[in-house]
Image (cartoon, rainbow over all chains, first blue to last red; front, side, top):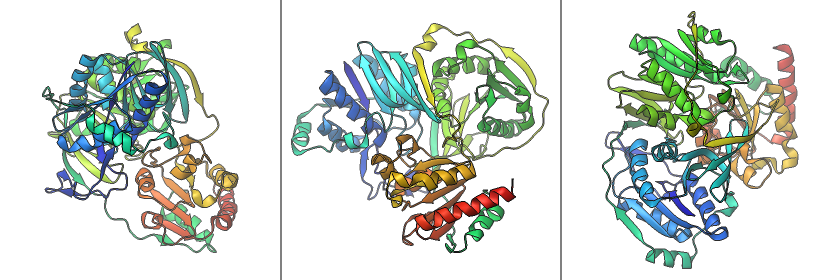
Length: 248
Length: 322
């Protein structure tokens, strides 16, 4: 089985979010970048397929050279080779289109991406990629098995889950559950050493067009102070929730 | 030219978000001086969509669509959008809407903005405000394509009545087997329990509750308030509560009217996930817990003493106010 895992290079979940250039650019100053958590769950599942069922695992990213440490980390976790499409990721459609060109060439059976990146939260790349490839698509995937040319997946839905089957090639939008948090792997020294020698191919982009443009950013208005209520005066809380917040 | 809006229903009954997206579509239609066409699939009481401003309902009745299949639903919506020559398509932020939106975007060659929180700031350029960085920031996005798709964040616009006498038209989409490549085998849905996605109120517990055996009082509060139960990441990682209850950056987002956090310190990842909730209450023994900075109302106290007392008071309140 040939697997491709899409890796987004995103600010660590604990990052403080700031903007520069008149609020038009994300301020990367002092920000630690990581593999997008939703992608890391998928990558870890890909490693399981590689070890238990036999598979090759390529990883791919659309971005500049600054994303390479993140790709090396994914290689250290165990992916076989990396592809970086050398262009700035501008919107979901452009990224999906660039990915689809490489994915088509590679004839992958299974493509795993995260349900969304934790920076732009667009949540559109996996679905668009599937659509552009004419592949099956399962989003918010929390369990994935492959037997021959058929996958059985569990999809999280509002208030429950749904079990589906799909013929390969398949694109999934993964999230926590496709593997557990405790299954995630911290690269060891041997992995890190090996990752340095693994191929990281830089491909030039197709020049795909965009459909949206992130014009500017804004931080939420600062919050007012919390109103503290004494544990001995719970009637006050109920009164505030009812009359002030109109929440109950 | 009309604004197209997809209204979701479950077992024939419209979800509350269906009325919210219609209200929003009405708002856009008024900006653009056009009409609202709502698409409903196998639903009942479609006239109710008129209450929130739908001029027309295209009612798809199809046994093939009795189970949600993203590709088939996207194909059906594409057909209607083309027939109506719609330039704007509005969807909710439900799991199903987010599943089909990117497929629809490719079919319609439309730019798609998800998690939108307000009416467009301008029509030309077509600019919307959406959340980004998991609610840590907003992003003003311009959609540059001829057809635009908007995924509206739940609870961000609200219900606005705008009575119209919605006309109804039944529609039979052309569906083929290629749209059913993903086959639904079984659906496992919690019945008789409010889901986090649909809940007006969410009651959430953290590590401060010390163990899964202490969730009785959380569930009791949820029962009294008709709320959904949720939990912090460590709680789901330790297996005290199911993953489906984990809310936060890598879990589910919450955009309820009221979020009550019990024994949750408020890690930045947790706060990001629940930020979109309107009113936040925290109950925690530690006055330095970061959650107090994010909350509207706070009680510094031991949950094991406060929550049972609060539950009694809430019961009383509910008995007098229903």
